[in-house]
Every structure is written in structure tokens, then in C-alpha cells.
Length: 454
Image (cartoon, rainbow, N blue to C red; front, side, top):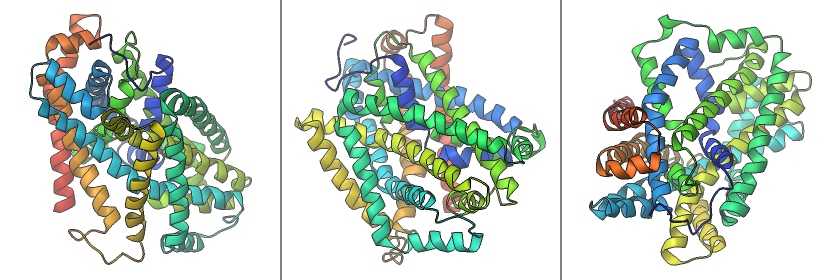
């Protein structure tokens, strides 16, 4: 089984895989959420706790996902089933693959709506709609967008098409080519915005917000926040990393690769914070505005600063690229499975799945206006889909992957695939994937559900 090759192709080298997986991990949450929760929960002290959580929860599960994908060289649904059969286990373990792929697919359906907002703001920044704008007018502009299904439908459609075009190209002509362009562009945009932020006049305040070591703010709730983000930030539990792992070279080190991805993901999030928050502080705006930070607070800040129109455009372009690379990884697992199961050409599989997602996204965007009165368990359609994926499907999928990789697969299979080079390193991985990571994800699962339902 080790010599098997994926019918979809393979990454040209290890660094392409690292960039692709980092692109999957770096999404909308990295740009605004992680920097903010860092500043609010102890700065440098929070970062240390977060890195420990990454090492004990995120990294072991990510290694588990990749080893399963690379072992079988198939889509997550088939990869889990086939490795279960190889291990002499019940093939119904393949349901784990189904859960992850379905979660990622549902997420894409409403993620594309939010990404559509980003595209709208790229156009708005580029045409000067936010120059010298006040917070009241910025808020009204955002409300106007949410109230307009026609505008949201246009941008939602454009974004779905952008993703389908890349995925239809396959691993080498689609995913790899896009990664080679978009990830360097993302890093370049981030550095340009960081340079702009350095001259905002409030860089020291932004640095202090993010990195001042404040253990007093590191409460138990802050530790839980770090634990939760360490899982969600790496795109775990949604089939994306397993699918990307199936295209990874046999000789590439899974351990070193995953550590690199974890470091890059964290660095991008922190640099994004250093690029954003000095601008927010320079304009005496609220850093804790949540999603409103991106669509209301920051447009006001850029609109009032010298050169703000240009750099506001570049900022939303950065966010758009991050959303694009993440969404590509959400569609890829389902597309790979349809190609394997039904023999469809890539283009047809991606187009069919993209069309279904487009229809699902219409329901989500209408929940902000015409269908606002439709409730599922007291939640609008958009909020309900967000709730079931983030609070039930992803944690459950991550928990099952940890159990599967740690307890169901044979030690020979995992040891051979990981090839960590020393028994100590393998034993450390096996201990964390068996005992620490499942407990960590279970805590995330229970606490999130309790917080949402209490």
C-alpha cells in the first residue's frame, strides 16, 4: 500500500504541500479573531498557552489526518475505509471520512456568503466608497449589503466560480498552480500592510495589545479559548488536510511538515494582528468589534488615514486571498470522492458540487433578509449551519480522527507512515493522539455546546 499513487496527482514538492495546507488553515478567522483573542486574554501569556495547545492537540491530530490520507492515496471517505480494512477493522469506520467531508462542504456553502462580502468590500475600497466615511455610515453600508439579496447573490456566485475553477484544474494545474501564486501574494500583502501599520503612529500600542505578558488575564476561560482555537485554526476535522495529505510525497516528513504549517499559521495570524490593531488604535476605534471589526471598524479607519484607500483595498485583497485558499480546500475532498466513486471528470465533479453549494448558499444569504423569519431551533439558516458545523460536526470529526489514528490503526501502519526516526518521538505522538488530544477536543465539544445552549 505504501507505493500506491493517487489518481488525482501529487504535489511537486514538500513546500507546495506546506503552502497549500497553510492556505487551507489561514482563513477569515486568522485575520481578525486570533489577534483579538490574544490581546484580550493575556497577550504573550496567551500565545504560550496557545502554542502548548497546538503541540498537544492540533499537531497530533493533523499528523493523524495526513498519515491516513497518504497511506490510502484517496479522498477522505475512501481513505478512512481502506485503511480500516488494511488494519483488519470494520470498513464502516469510513463514516468518519463522510462526517468530515460533509462538514467542510456545508461550511463552504455559508463561508462563500461571507467571502462574497469581502469581494464587495474589495470593489468598494477600490472605487473610493469608504473615503472619509464615519462609523454610522459604514454601519449602514454593511446593513444595506445584508439587506440586498441581489448584491450578495452576485458576489456569492463570483466566489463559488473562483473556487470551482481552481478545483476543476486538479492537483497540479489547479491547486498547485493557485498555491504558487496566491500564497506568496498573501505573504507579500501582509508585509506591505505591516509596513503601513508601522507608520500609523500607534504601532507600539498594537504591539503591547498583542504581546505584553499579562498572566493575570489568563483565566480558565482564556485557556479554553486557546484550546478551541488550536483545533479550529488548522482546518482539522473537515477532510481538507486528509485530502491534501493524500497528494503528499512518500519521502516527505509528516512531523516536520506539520510543525512548519503550525508555525506559519500562527505567524500569519500574529502579523495580521500587528498590521490591523495599530490602525484601529490610531483611529481610537474598538478592537473588540468582532466580525464588525472587518466590515465596519476597519473601513472607517482606512477611510480616514492618508493612503487609506490603497491600503484598505490591499487589506481586503489579503482577506479575499485567505478566504479563497481556505474555500478551495473545503471543496477538494468532496470533488475527489465524486471523481473516484462515479468516474466523473474533474471539471464536471467540481461544477456539479459547486452548483449545489451555490444553491445552499442562497438559503444562507436570504436568512439575512427575505428569510430572516425562518428559524431552525431559534436560529436563522446561516447561524444554524454555522452552529452545527463548528459546535458539533467538526469537534466530533476531530475526536473520531484522534481515536481512529491512535487506537484503530495498527502501530505498524502509523509507525511506517510517520517515519519519525526515533521511538521516543513516535511514542510521544502516540501518547498525545491517544490520551491528550481526544480529551482536549472533547472539552472543546462539551464547553462549546454548553455555552451555546445554556
